[in-house]
Image: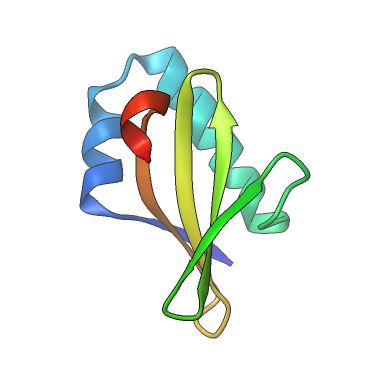
Length: 84
């Protein structure tokens, strides 16, 4: 599987400090091997795609798993209070 970013998530990553950005990117690389890690939480279903959330400190990452295309789409990255 490969990881793709939405416009919002890539803009948010560019604005972050280097150390936090690398923590998030390392966590997202782990999704390639295991798309649903034990700390992921199922949020909802959108167009037959499951939306999951992972926590990285105070940052939340929402992502969809597109099974047919073998893609993990990172739809939103933001602070906890603004992501939902």
